[in-house]
Length: 349
Image (cartoon, rainbow, N blue to C red; front, side, top):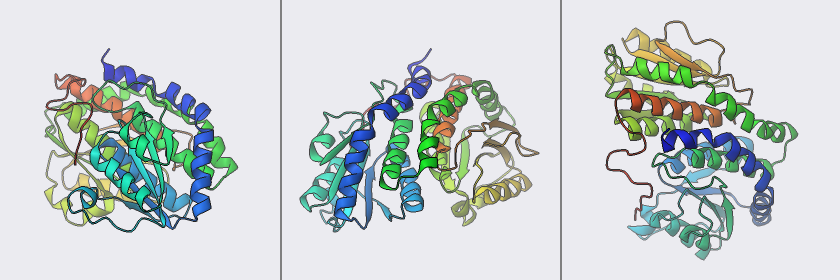
């Protein structure tokens, strides 16, 4: 078994560890944010962590009513003109905690007197040393180049922080159900392999694919697209369904594969309408859904009823997307553990 596939399988255990070990750190962070009466959050991240930041933006804005800005690190490292951060909480998300540009955002936030949080899998990293409060991911060593367990650990930590900032019994109970939902996600492997085979078939232009979601699942679309690109050398483009209709829909042609991420919630009707439009234009529509049955007319689907509220569904959906990426790489004769020209830690300035 590949390292990537083995680490995918670890995620229910990691989620249980996060739930058991993180309450104190998350409570400390929430108390610091509450004590400063922050106006919002600025989140710095790269790669998969940037998609966790997209998830955090929706969660903190919808659950906690806190405006969220995604940092532009070049403002801190190239233009040397950072914005005012003193009224904000600066949250950095980084598996390795070693990218200099993400570290620079936290360093500047602390210099300005902002609350600074480092969500990282390396509590001994440069990022952790710069932050006021460290939130460990508790994922254990992640050796596969494509991230898996650190991504879902990041999402779960963000959700725990959101709950600590605004406690809610039903949301807290749903968080306790996440490990079981991740176990259910591992059971869709046969569906993931079948969907990968469909995408790789001669009927589709398998060198590129569009991945669409909306709301909480914009992050899912972004992360699944990255995994497909990393592991399978497929040019995967993720977008919000709404943004896709504002121009990129012009590239749709017969045979183009389109993966739509569909979860129960306010955005579901928009995603289904986009599927109809894509089918009418000849695209080959495939689906990742929490419905019991896929839409009529889709080429293939992963159906994954999660039992979770929409705000937490991106966690098991991410596992299903990882399985899809793993099997698509295998279908294409590629090694998902050794993506072309990639290494585990990428440092940008």
